[in-house]
Figure (cartoon, rainbow, N blue to C red):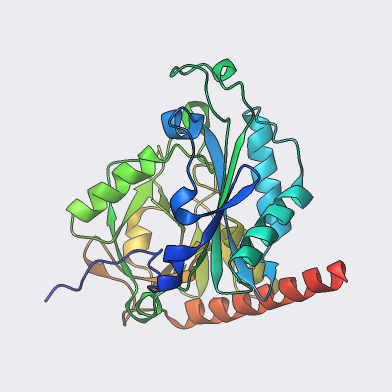
Length: 314
């Protein structure tokens, strides 16, 4: 019997999320009242950037790294929100406090160019200032993600060149990835494995992708994928702890023959891969020994980062 579908972002059902409060442009509102205009440039055009952050013991893990990426992206597309990382931190903290959250929570922070005067493309029509929304939900990954891993299917949709739409942008324009995910589901898999324009293995529709071969950890060059915060932390942890790690071009041939494979992302940390294109990865579904070891190191790193933030804020 074929196992039920899942995704790397599956979370435990939590009824409290039906009554959360959401930050919208300076106000913290009940979920049913948290709305933006149909003229908003994010809704109308996908013109905006977002970040996903996790709350651990009252601190936002790797907050500075997320802010570096967010503000680099906003500057690149000429969106000025009139505040810096400290202002964003205040928004996140107030929203979490309004929901009584100190941990096991995930925030989707969204920034768009704002409401438009007319329903057309030109950025100058966004004349009313940016839109900022923070949705913070009670959120823990489902246990099955660690137990049996996700199934990937290679899809025809690729990650594009920087001169079309640079995949390093964490933009609201996610249609490329949505199409890839649909293609994977229609192939009977959970999520999509996407190639780069040259046919090398790149990333999935939602997470960064790694393989383990003969004790070495491989991931893409990073030229055509979202340069994830968790991705970078995993690479650094491997280097610091004696695990050979390579950012390189490699093909499906190497991926199919991998001893282990895993995804990285802020929500799920490390999520094991059970199969690629129907081919089992490793000897058992779920995380192999290298994946488990890196996952433990990553958990320790989060705890250290949280402790350092607490000390800095005293």
